[in-house]
Length: 177
Image (cartoon, rainbow, N blue to C red; front, top):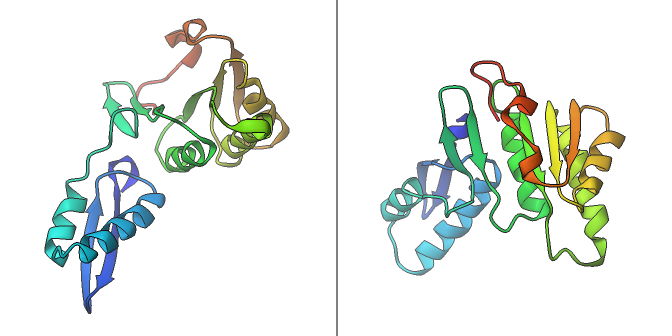
């Protein structure tokens, strides 16, 4: 359903239950299946599980959509990690219009921190991000990963988010960020 969510059919107790999850991404289907299994163990009916999944709201900083007249912003910055960032980039790749990703440093990644940042940049290139803005010291590795991988449009490195302005984005009307 684009940025509006994902639909799936959950099969349990001999029933098929169509569900619309209001958060996008194929990974949300796996999350919904886990939640459904827990719900069944706790004695919830199939209908109660469907209703709960369809009322799902993201926590602050996790795939919160901010829509303006010129762009849609996806706020997915809370406790970002390589897996969550790649999932967000996958969703972004399915959106319409120009695709801009502004990615910052990820922390607490351990000794593989540089390689993990680089893998995120490579993934951004693979999914065809038009403009990748990498913010922070660690994110230089994200930029390097994108630059080494074909498919990425422009790559921009900045030290702080204050260095990025609306004019850097040069967004035409109805673009998506």
